Image 1 (cartoon, helix red, strand yellow):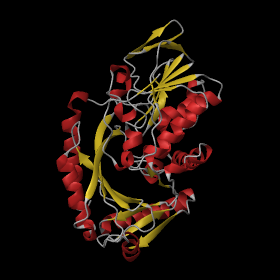
Image 2 (spheres, helix red, strand yellow):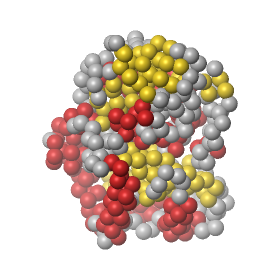
Image 3 (cartoon, one colour):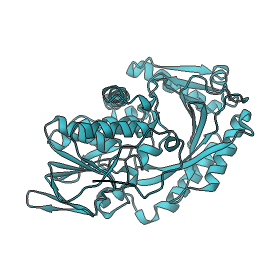
Image 4 (cartoon, one colour):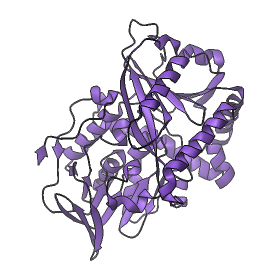
Length: 434
């Protein structure tokens, strides 16, 4: 059953430049399937795709509209990195584990390109331009040099190289960096058009994708599960939880909610830069990040500059966070003085205790994939192949994603003040150059 959506759109650049959204289709009445996938973002759609390819019958249910959550709010950076560096992984868990994690990242990046091609998502504007990490002081620049050397020598990754301060300034237009590390893996994408095209492709393949269909609860029943929604009950054999940072919407996803710290990330976008002094900024079309712990990132989309970062707190958009971003952006790019900021929005990042994503089983009926820690566009789009394997009873080698269990957050009720405390400590370390 199709209907108009009463919820307001997120006031993002992506919403303003999106192609027509997929029609809203709610579940209408009871249904039966093999697997109910809770969450209609990249992970949920990817899981449904690969379950169907295995001959299983999935149903995807999304509490809001397709693209309402992280898949439509992210900065659209396609990256294969994890929040924990590969060298640190090798030191703690061995070189082969680091190699597998590195391979998973590259596979995920390449998978995005295949999805865009397979489903003909031209509007996703996927560009394999790579990324550049910009060092804000000599200490972090030395760390980048060591990281690049280790990646080449230990993992044979020749896609990384070191750029001088002059080269970084020439590429970005910003002169406050002392150097950087170029990584030719990855790129950028229009994330909302990507998820729209993905959902359209899944539906065209005959897989039901229901939005505005929140799961209020699910329970074991016989040899399966009963999944309850306001519009009907779905009888299935298994459930996949793919709600990531938006696992607080209903009580149904409580089994993973207490293992995730939702961390708000804010973004702004400028008016078109043609004809301004800022027109030549970020000319390569890459994505850029700083080496600060309280990271800022920036990129171009069309003729606009996007600028984002951590540090927005609470459950809603923060005027103070947007003001701080705009102030930092103009300080970094003085050419933007007087250029209007036309879009301001935010979204939730799912942080975990060990800063790693986790995929696995809660029990014999429930599988989960959550905790992308801010780098989820690529991994969440490709992880469905492995989630489907777990649903089918297999044990894919996902390195630390499956080797370590999802940990509950101690004193979960105090997570918001704890996030502020950690953020304050990170800001202090950034301020002293460490």
